[in-house]
Figure 1 (cartoon, each protein chain N blue to C red):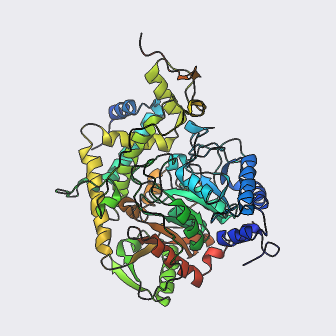
Figure 2 (cartoon, helix red, strand yellow):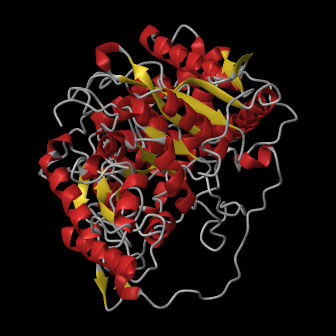
Figure 3 (cartoon, rainbow over the protein chains, first blue to last red):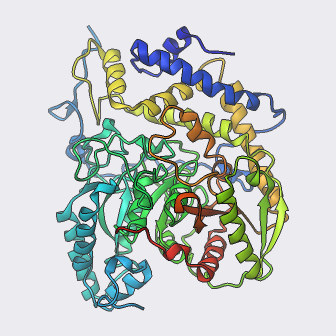
Length: 99
Length: 500
């Protein structure tokens, strides 16, 4: 199975990446080269197996915790916004989204 | 123990340096100044991407103050440097990406905080592949200290060669003695492989041992922090300070108390069963690497260990499995870089979606874009089961293969990489060559097992060769014990590159 230039355009849109034509072409070659080495993985019989997310769960139960929903941080708005590209009166600025 | 009059500060081990500092034979300020001067003298290696001398010296003065007050920690006054994947106050945190150029974190990563609490002083931030994606440190968009534009990180054993990656700057800083020890991160081998290529010692603990809070995320189910230093003894000191549960900050952090990983360094290896996986010694292994690894295994036999043939039958499959899972998680993690709350934003755009696309096109390098594309594709509708879930199922098989192997042995040994460090630019037109060279480090990463690289000799071009040791879950102390005993019988970890 080989990806087409249309696939590259569709994936780039999903990934919110602008690719120029030369980049798209390079990406197509690279991804098709990559998926060649993935093919042998698809043939492996994995029926009845559970996917492994936290690796230590292979040997013991691992619970992914949630913490209590309580405020634990002081207000650090200025520190948190110091690396923002556009801020005004403590708000992040983005292009207009609602007409 | 050496004294500063006979041995330069940069030649001391972390434990010797800590002892000198505690005895107040040298101050933390003098030590920091020594390493800062040395770092600048060797900045052509490209190891550091950020220094802040004022902040470093302020930390050093505070360390001297704690020493005087009698409240010194285990690493009081010892200068360390951090891979630029850890966020830090006072130094920019960029993960080697243009996307985060100049980013100032409002907080310290948990690992950074814990090392600081143990008394360590931060020298600066170390170069790495962009978002830790790479095996040669050739994917960094950061300009090293002393450079105006991105420049290669150079292996001090041969400056025409790569240092390995993604913790390339970390490995070079230790090998060139620009820091006594450093932090690194390992997703698919990023501590072990550069440690091997630069002739130093590095350990990746069991997944979940060290908090990932404040580590710029690449692949969350694989990323793990660890120390890199000249010896196993020094790694044990750092690792003891770095590990421990972080229940409120990292949901994958394990509820395992911090340990003293130095406690069993001296234990005898008599009767230790070392598993030798046949799949790690096949056709792809360069003869010079094989010779060095075989010689190290012979040393282990002399130390009383027994070599046991084992099989890890899915070693080759670990390449596609890893390069599906890691990009999938990366594509999700890197979706946060949208030009809104932090980081780069494109100058010209028509609307919000256009801003996202142009921002990401400008901010990410080629390798990162490629992995985002792979990840987006394998997570997309209609492909998720065939790729991502299939990879996670084979991941379980790989983890089970290790458990079967550990029925017959106490730890596993083999090469870290199929060859010594290659020349800068050599894999430039073939990124898949880098992927294939990760074959021996990926299995332990996928299984979440602790693994380390220990200097085992020299190969082609007099380049260092590392021996990989893999332990079962939570067996870090055993690994460090085995590494330490080898280092008492050999001196490869004490050798240093010429010209420094």
